[in-house]
Length: 462
Ligand code: IFM
Image 1 (tube, rainbow, N blue to C red):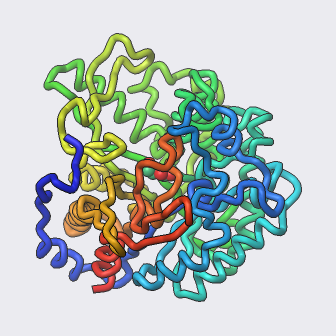
Image 2 (image 1 turned 60 degrees about the horizontal axis):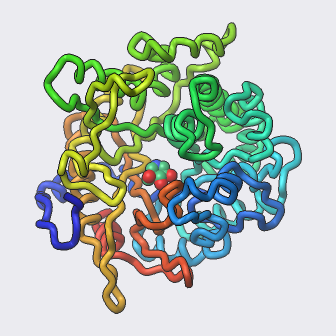
């Protein structure tokens, strides 16, 4: 059942939600998230080099819905000032965005593009001017194509290239940026880009997947060390996708399948970072990853992050399957289960975010958790000057309620960012699933505040 405007209201206890919120310290962070490739456009402007997503969307068009690309996207490159003004008008004071590596270093390594740094100088300066704190992600999937030509994340040299890029950014911006996230959702860019071939660069198979995992883990930790070496006062985090996992049937084989999928989707990146190593006891077919682990890596692949960003949207049900190589497990989609879901076919299940906070909170060594992404794609209803999207508003309310429930119970969760600020380019899904609090007309670039945006601004400022 797809949730639509005619669907019955989901249950939400408004009083409970407001009561939870009232008890929060004033320093709980409320914000919105976005990323460079999904919003900026200006794909070849002012000396920017091509990224793997520029190449993928323009050369493997059949892999993107309606053969779209993000050459223009939301034209945030030119319109950031208006977008920040709009953000300010809603009282949103924390903005998570990413820096495009090939905008700053067109060939990925070596020469630095002053005009690329200049764009982020302007963006950061205007954020600060409006009292909006910048939360900067250093890698949100747009690897320079020049580095992909040398193997990209499968080439161990990427660790050095990435650390050099991080160093350039942090040296340049650390006088104004105090909150950094090294990476966005490594499991997604490595899994979809280097195993399934669904995302850029479109590679497949274990021979790509395993080295890419290890080099992403090393880069995440070495990148974090580079930030702290330059600015010991910076707050350094990194972000992980995660979903609450359940067996489809109460059968031992489905429980085993669910356990393996949990290890792959939820544990594969956080556990090495915490010094626990890869969960290969549970994921035996991934044991060959050890061939990429060199002497001394056991120290390099750990880092004591100041915070961990959790990005949760849904839960997954898992069934045993003989036909799925390596895992013997497959996901049973929400439409197949006939449960309420979004335009991404993701089940609406708010308790998943609570379960994920509890799961990450239970790891010794995680000092602080931020929800760095949560949100939903639904159809928006257009009126003359208003866009109603009460399913998105309800989704946000129900998820925030679960976040604050976890906090009430003592979990170390200290912030929440909505994905996303404006409707933007949703990777292989093109432009149709819209996640924004702000509607983007992609023909005119006009922005219209949706009801969910008005609600969020009101809620966080009450
Ligand atoms: O749009 C993406 C984002 O880039 C990473 N996290 C999930 C979002 C929704 O799919």
